[in-house]
Structure formats: C-alpha cells, structure tokens
Image 1 (cartoon, rainbow, N blue to C red):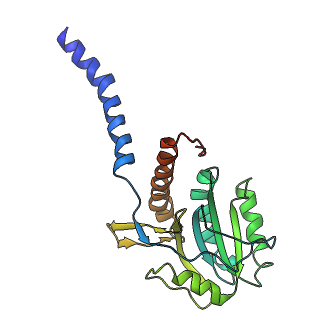
Image 2: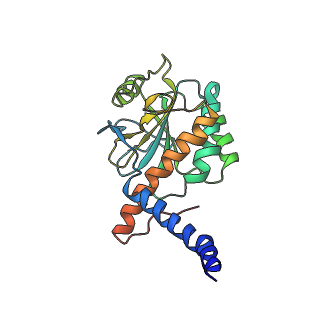
Length: 218
C-alpha cells in the first residue's frame, strides 16, 4: 500500500510542485536585463500613412532595413515567421521597420509578402525618417553595432514600454547581447523568441498584480 501511495505521489504531486516552482521562478527571477536606459523616441518619423510613430508605452522590436529593403528581405522573413506571427496579438506589441525617406515605393513588394504570410499586419509599422535621424536614433542604443552607409543593420532590438533596450548580459556566445542577428534563423527562433517571451511574461505578471487582463495569449 505504501508503494502505491509513493507512485501516486510521484505521478501527480511532483509535476504540480515542479510547475509551481518554475512558474514562480519566472515571476521572481527571470527578467530580461536592461542594457540601455531611455532610448530616443522616433521623433520626426512617420508611417506609410503619414502618421507620427512613437515607442512610448509599447513593447517594440526595431529593425533597420536601409535604403534597399528587398536586398535584406531575409531579415523580415525570419521575423514574420518566427516572431511576429506568434506575438502580434499581445497588447501593446509592435514591430517597427526603420527606413530612409524615399524608400516608400521600394518597400511595397516586401509589405505584400509580409501580408501574404500573416493576415493581420497592423502591428508591423514601417517608419520613415532622414538618414541623419536614423543614425541618431540608432546611436541612442549605445550598442557596439554599426549601421552601414545605407542605414542597414542586421541586428533587431527589443525596447520595453519605457524605451529601455533589453537584451542579455551573460550570453554564452557573445557575453552582452544588445541585439539579435535577424539574418540568423536559429538566433531569431531561439534567443530572440525566448527573450521576448520573458519580457512579455514580465508585463503579464505586473498586469495580474493590478487585476488587469490586457494581454492576449495565442
């Protein structure tokens, strides 16, 4: 009889205890580190409809596609399939693609490809600004990465609602990870995907404490 109860305990109670432990671990210990505080907002930038673009009170992914977005479309494809599809239904999430003024027509084929991959593209924003403003915005991240002369960077960045740059401060491969290589499918699928889940969970926990249910989960 004693053995029977031991088996039942192992089968039913231990998994529940493990779930509670790891769930509380996310709440208490797993927070995505802040690497740069108070990144500059997108002042002077406009979207495809001419509206102002802002980072305030949004969880934002930032991608710099440069003046030839089709040449770097693999970055957008990796993000739409492995990140945007899974997360765009979360409240206050947006993916912003930063482009130089004058590329509005060049980006249309890419926008069409994205809309074929996912039905709702309302949270994927194309933001246009001068090359000087793009550089100033990128520099405010204080990352070790550089834009090329056309305004392109292969790295995509996570900003929280307070415009803080989030990333990893002890990554096993690069130590401090300010951004994620958008051309690297595995890095986008694994590292960026995991880190975005941590940040979204952080905000969900905060909302639950305030008895709010703004976040949707796919």
